[in-house]
Image (cartoon, rainbow, N blue to C red):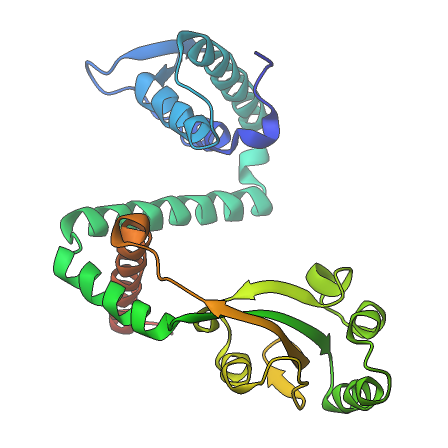
Amino acid sequence: MQHPPLKLATLTLLAALFTTPALAGEAVVATVNKETLTHAQLNLLVKSFEAQGAKDSDELRKQLTVELVAREAVAQEAVKLGLDQSADVVAALANSRRDLLVNAFQADYIAKHPVADADIQALYEQQKIEAGDKEYRVRHILVKTEDEAKAALATLKKSGKFEALAREKSIDSASRAAGGDIGWQVPMVLVPSVRDVIKALPKGQLSEPVQSPFGWHILKVEEVRAFEFPAMDKVKDTLQKQLQTQAVLRAIEVIRSKAEVK
């Protein structure tokens, strides 16, 4: 196994920067110039690599312990040089501490406020209705202004060469090379202005210019086919996370509204 790349060791850096003396009885994995590195710090780092697809193993832990020690040694040297007093470092540490605390709050809130199965079922039924029973294969040309969209539409009405014009004029880099093809779309996942036009647009016809937060679109529905909403067991985890996120955002808004801000 290669030495863990430094760019993947964000948590290692944070662990080194926030190193504190081990609590009584806390297991220690290494001591660097009298500063202790604990199993708790190592476990956090292991979890971060597991999230990237690595498997917990003795070999991984050995590699990450080496990384943790190296980071601690470098962090101590930085402190000796007074770099911990740099305005940029102080600000970055404050931001990192704040982010870690926010993440801890979110995890704690989710643990203390589990999502009810009834709420998941209600959201499932709502989204099933919103999704409808059709999906559409769509092409579009995206430009910056309404005048550009009108000019593109006029050109299309004369030439009928949608794909060629999309490759030439569209600013959507994701679909431009494919002639504006954005694949099969369920309307509910699209922005409302585009969604409404696609559902009403006859197959093969061109839309009038449509504005969205991304710019102005000329839309064309290539094909329409039946759509079956996924079974609950396929989307339950996603719906649960969606409800958890909504609940956390509401809690954060309450906290923000009560904060004294000057």
